[in-house]
Length: 225
Image (cartoon, rainbow, N blue to C red; front, side, top):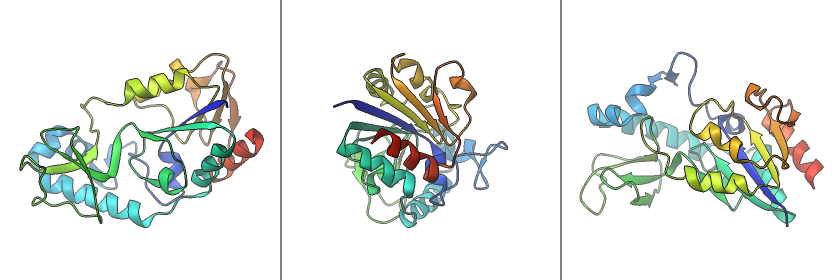
């Protein structure tokens, strides 16, 4: 069974109503990312950070998987499929994909402020200052912030190295170190890029589908099936 590795970003979830991570002005839905997406911001104002991610979590829980998410799940009937996503939502899982690696964490879990490996599933959308881990320390969103290591990066690189088919969907490959994962993909692998025009892949013999993810991904899946 051939292995397909799919690398996704914010573009695949945008059509489900979730805003992309950040705009050119460095704001995320009106918030300064330095205040809500860094360890320093958390230490300065934990209540603001909790409020921000509570709002994001509520939006995620209200969102529904779109045609791109459900199309990828169909590949599992014929291929060994591994999803690697930069997104912190759970739309891939709810769309039916079974093997999903979250590079930057997942917002539907919380984690200990003193032990990042200690995580908890969440019920509902709200995390408060009263929620603590087994050490009695505050729980924070299970999200990798700027300035923090990406714990699953090596595992993701190993997955890319084994790909027979590789697809990039809804990401401009602008955020490192995650963007460097394409360098691990074997030269002989069949490669697709869907949704965005990525200058990084010039000269790499990529098959490009210049359509929104909800249209382009089903097209790619139909060709592969």
